[in-house]
Length: 167
Image (cartoon, rainbow, N blue to C red; front, side, top):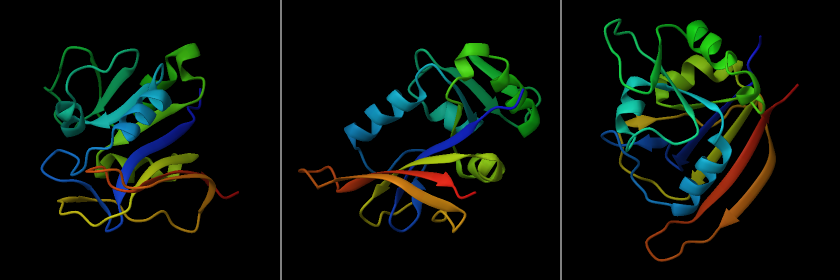
């Protein structure tokens, strides 16, 4: 069974997606969108991303891709290769409707970028210090939806973007 994949992430104008295991901004609308887009779906992530979560996210499968053959965590389905992660994601039957979400980090996005059909990106309109970066989507992606949001207090301006692979 082939699993439809989409990547979901927030990216600052300077390419930053993380700093010391956290996001350098707090955008409540982004967190709500993340929940809406991932609920009921398998999520593929790296070990560091899993460990950065506040706990298991309800109503989602947590597929963790790691090189550590001894690593395990309650509630995590462990994979040691992208193919193994995809096999686990495809084993969910009805839960796979709408695809599986790749939620990070940067190495995991790079592993699955060529297989993804869609990117759901929150573009944060600002430059932030960070230690984890994502390049801007290349010409193989076309913008199909955009929703802009102005800065409100401490919440920076941002845009929700949906990109699909150009065929």
